[in-house]
Amino acid sequence: KSDLYAYLPFAFWNLLSENGRLGIIVSNSWLGTEWGSTFKEFLVKFYKIESIVTTSSVRWFQNADVVTNIIILSKRNVPIEIPEKSEQTKFITISYNFHNDSNFEKVQEIYESIITNTPNIDLKIETYSTQKIEDINKFVNEYSNMKNEHRKKINARLSYLKKQQHNKQIIDN
Image (tube, rainbow, N blue to C red; front, side):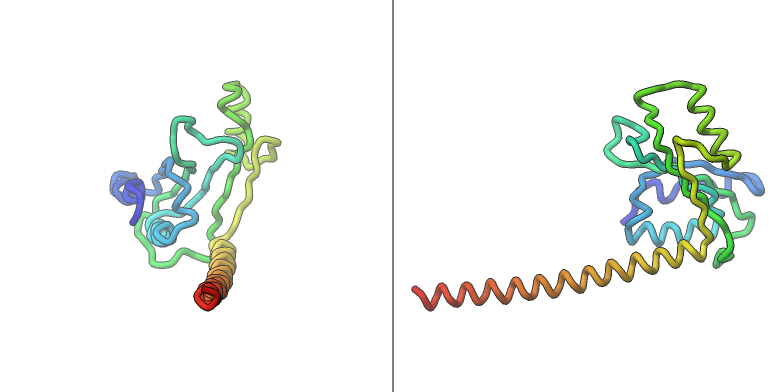
């Protein structure tokens, strides 16, 4: 099951000119779900993911029920099977609270820092290669599987203890 927005980049692909760029606002759910992994797997066949922009302070939209990201994509003129391991993606986290202060100069300063990749107290820019992202995902998945195995063992032990307690109550009665 995927969110509706998962289909948008692929619909826009044919509309973009050669080497065109696309910026879309999406729910951040694609970053941590199974369908999100599939979405990313297909996304990188049609686009190079230039940047993923998020905020650490508040939601982009105060009336939205979801946390959103902005994804900046560059069209691949011909889809590929596997992206190069050296391709770079910027992960940009903005800490500035746009809702408390709509200072245009401050917004412009943050924008220019993002475009020029220069340090700014209100944002953090980290760049990772496709290989590094794969390594991180592999680690997270292995850790998650460990937690699941641990959870199964705990649940099995709890079931055993509950059964023992139930049997003891029957004997006591």
